[in-house]
Image (cartoon, rainbow over all chains, first blue to last red; front, side, top):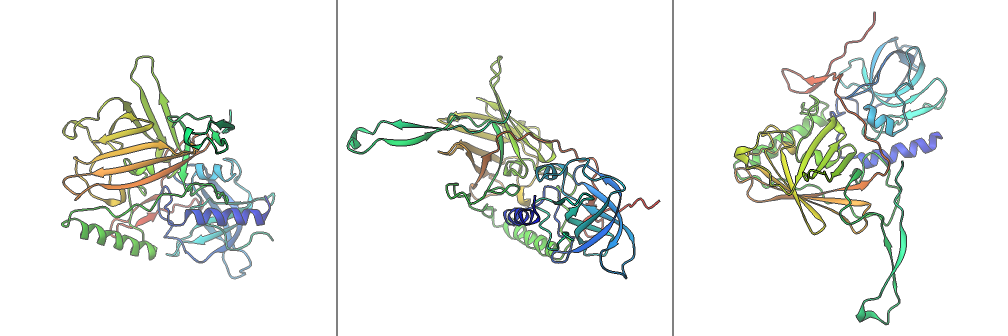
Length: 139
Length: 266
């Protein structure tokens, strides 16, 4: 899928989801209007309900002052992710990835995934309820 | 096997009064007027694009506020507004969802995730319609040609107890026995709440509507009614949803939904 098509798909999904809740909890604890790009290595990947999680040892890309730390990255649930083209073994421990995320508003080292760029360059969104990436992972 | 709606055009004889008019071409579906079985998604859908199909039916109106009695409505409204404000501030109150507890009735019929309807014609005559909501693996069993138990005899459950019958091509489902703890939109209800659903295919049988009416003589001044709609999702295979790793809970002091972060940095 081209990034432009992916972008449109995410935007349409987000519009359709406006005013609806996730099937587990509100995403309000995450920054609504701020996203950052993290670059790092997957240290753990759990494909479980109610949410898939990635633990990432990494730092904000392009920010030389950013320290490397471990982040808990919240993804949608396996059902939603399967419906938008993920696979249960798509992410593996040791993968070096780039992600667009909305950090927790309270400063905890956790964030809501918006999009992920896999080692092979594929970019995937996180389903309608999580909303689209507003920053590019292209380069 | 993926089922694709196969349609064919048939010519219908012109009504006697319109003999002069040309014969009308009308689409005939492979689905009969009572074929509610299959997999469905909420319509309009949150999780798959509808495209720009100008033929698609108009979606339902938003669910109205409940006609709660004067002694209950202000407190309910204030609670909703407080929850909205807290959510806006990033501190959404924990709900049943936060604790991985499904909606129960009637909320599970909203179709948060895809929904499967199974229509069983059993050899022993105890016909049943089973509805499975993917979110939280919720299941409800609707017994045909039975009335649900009276509220005083209904063991409280999330999905309640449901009986149904056909009125023409509309499946009329009556439900009693929904736990008072199960509150759609946090609307309080008593064990005397009754839910009536009128489920029918639209003229275009790719779509199904569910006209819901809630009555409760203890809390409501009159019926609370709205419609939910669904679109067929041929070939969709339902997924499992077991909450095996819930990191969310309620903050003991504030009641806000809180994420437990226990990172493995060893």
